[in-house]
Length: 362
Image 1 (cartoon, rainbow, N blue to C red):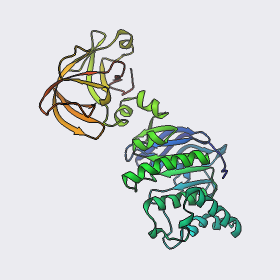
Image 2 (spheres, rainbow, N blue to C red; image 1 turned 180 degrees about the horizontal axis):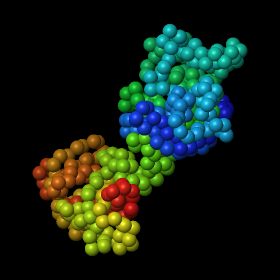
Image 3 (cartoon, rainbow, N blue to C red; image 1 turned 135 degrees about the vertical axis):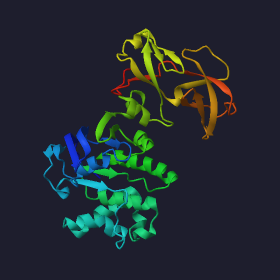
Image 4 (spheres, rainbow, N blue to C red; image 1 turned 45 degrees about the horizontal axis):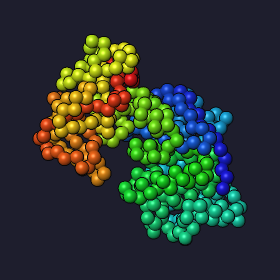
């Protein structure tokens, strides 16, 4: 099946609801065939941005292009996009076949052509055996496939998906992530996908755009977002457990004074720290834990508060003065709650942020 291809460009889009600015000066682009994820916490503006692209909301400022066409003034039906909702939005009184055929019937497509397209898409999604069932007779995963089928059968230029997997149980969600990613690559359709689930974003997206309070924080490939966060919000939002953050001051030109401990920076890195008031960020996976002092750079004593076993990993909650530090270690690590341990940070894996602006310095 060959669908139309189009890139999507959003230029300086702002959307207000009364006094609330839901999206502020948003600019981003999804290239042809690209899987772009809009990621962020609840209320960050990602669904509003998607609805603006779909034509379900009208931007107060800015421009939206699908292909080379400015679509601000086009109705949703004229934008040649298909939207898949969190609720699936299937018609309960119609069979799977009728649900999938419905958008084609509205376009006055010939019956033989409708039958051919529905059958073709049903085979693609492996739901041809379900065509005579009604939605109430389907599992959550099957309903999701039908919703996708109804979108695909229209042969749109762009897919817009709003948290389409959030109603599925955890096991099925993992399965459908892989299926949806494979389907998108097989069809090759440009897709913009909204989620608050960073695992979905990191595993599915070619590119991720992170929003917070309506403002775009960073756009990049998953590895870039994870290893080179642009600011303290991105560093704290991406990763599980979240990044450990320590308020600190730069003293003597190359040492971060975090009150409870000091961390010496290599001089070549210290040159990039242009503000005395900083935040030191270290991912739990980059916290090294020892039972005895190992004389590593920045090493400090910590008290083990809680252990959280999660199968192939063990999360340690460690108290260092006022800070609760999370560390990820091998499940065989032996220590009891209340033990004194020693922690250090993996060389080359720290991040330093300007405390006032939040921007990454290192």
